[in-house]
Length: 139
Image (cartoon, rainbow, N blue to C red; front, side, top):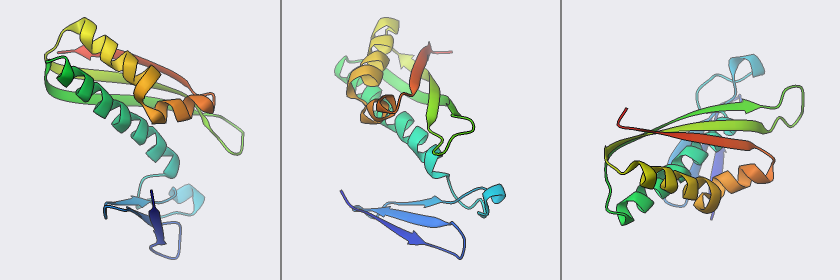
């Protein structure tokens, strides 16, 4: 995999492009000298966790012939305080699933993603991030 990173301005605004030409803007906060023109790199890690797990969950439920009409994930993360680098200490994910979905199958799909299939979850765990989750069905 190759990623190209280009500095966009005279600050910290960066444009990352993957091999497929997909682009993402990253920047730092105003307090840190950035212009707030993009996602913070550490926020992207947590976004990646949500995206990785969402794909897993949807694939698992599709194989189980569950009808998912909507999926939304809320993530609440906490970073270490007073440390450099400041790693993710914890992340709690709330999976909101809508559709004709068996509750046990939904819970199992999320568990499989978070404990077995999601590479981002495992990467975070290797850094001692505590990952927790819950599933809300048709709420």
